[in-house]
Amino acid sequence: MKRLLSGIKPSGDLNIGGYGGALRQYVNLQHDYEAYFFVPDFHAVTVYQDPRKLHQRTRDIAALYIASGIDPRKATIFLQSQVPAHAELGWLLETQAHFGELKRMTQFKEKSDGKDTVSSALFTYPVLMAADVLLYQATHVPVGDDQKQHLELTRDVAERFNNRFGSTFIIPEPIIQDIGSRVMGLDDPSKKMSKSNPNKNSCVHMMDSPEDIRRKFSKAVTDSEGEVRHDWEQKPAVSNLIEIYSVFSEEDISVIEKRYDGQGYGTFKKELAEVVIEKLLPIQEKFHQIVDSSELDRILIDGAQRAAQTASGTLLAAKKAMGFVTF
Ligand code: AQP
Image 1: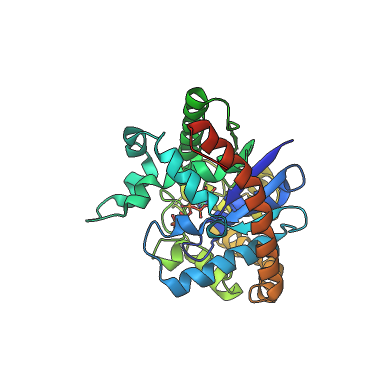
Image 2: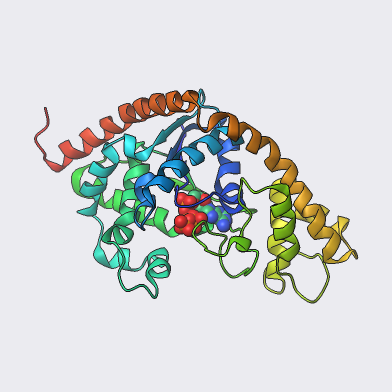
């Protein structure tokens, strides 16, 4: 059976990058896979999180999963910190990951760049991600472009473990989509749209008001050419906007290029904002209904129980394979 696991960190307010690169895909994939969607709250604290904000954002992400269309009766939705096996397998896998390969992770280099101190958890976090995936024997992992390298590490660590201790883990395959796998900042198309970017105009948040969305798109950088044409090399900013349009309208890029042929950026940006607003409004409405509800609590408690059942079987197998005394 095909099984997948993925999640979005509660490290900030979710933006349309995470929606395009992850959430939108989750909603489609839940029909074809036995799906586990978790909120990786342990990952969020690799950099400092204000405790109150972390608490709220964790609920927010879970509520957004459901509001966007993930069906908790179909998929298992849970919080990482509610399933202790993640931390335990994470430790065991740290014994199999190499310092050198972690040093090569570009996300660590980017996130530690220019900082006086960073937590050791930021350095080892890809190993915890490996544990997340391997615990559920996921055959597939939907990842944005930026997470490809971490999934490669997961595969290497799993293969190493299997070779050393006997076949224990399934080696997962990535699922990477073409459109939306790399949504870039509205202020700078060379940087990914990121939750932790302090420039609020760099991204559109999932919960932004229509006025904010219109304002942010009207301010988005373009180029001096005035032609709505998709070309990442020559026109990265406009290509990014076209891809966002395509993610939200579910139309092919060629259709969008044709529609705005000869119209300049003004009309295009205005209508892009409306396309995004139209998609986000019902999600926002459902989000408000569920985020503080006891229904969400129930879904997360039930999800954690289901997840723990699967995870504990894999953890036990890994411990036995390594020679730990188990009862
Ligand atoms: N801009 C993006 N374009 C495409 N995909 C994206 N994803 C995130 N941002 C974009 C994908 O969403 C999934 C969940 O990501 P995450 O939130 O767990 O981690 P992240 O990639 O580190 O997200 P951020 O927004 O950049 O958070 P911070 O700033 O806190 O590190 C992943 O599959 C990711 O590829």
